[in-house]
Length: 93
Image 1 (cartoon, rainbow, N blue to C red):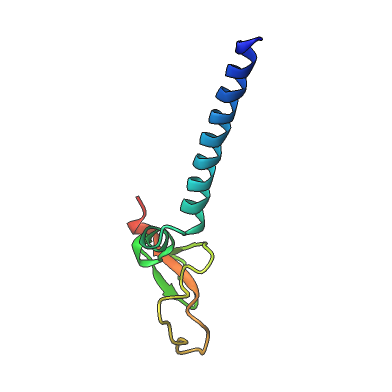
Image 2 (image 1 turned 90 degrees about the vertical axis):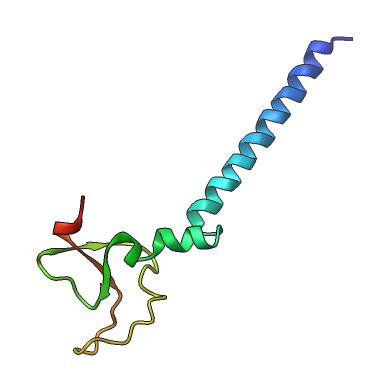
């Protein structure tokens, strides 16, 4: 019986299982499934920004899905939702 064929099969299975575990961890990190970590990554103030209805010329807009949704934002004076994360260009490193 050729034992080398069996050893290669077991090694391949172990490598595939480890690769799948790494893939699951990376997907969880980028989808925000790590709770506080995911929220901090997507939070506008943690980027040095402020949720507004529109950015000023001296500000840049940070694009992200749901980055301002949990800020408890009431509509601005113009009635528009404060759903844009605006970061002062002078603060950007």
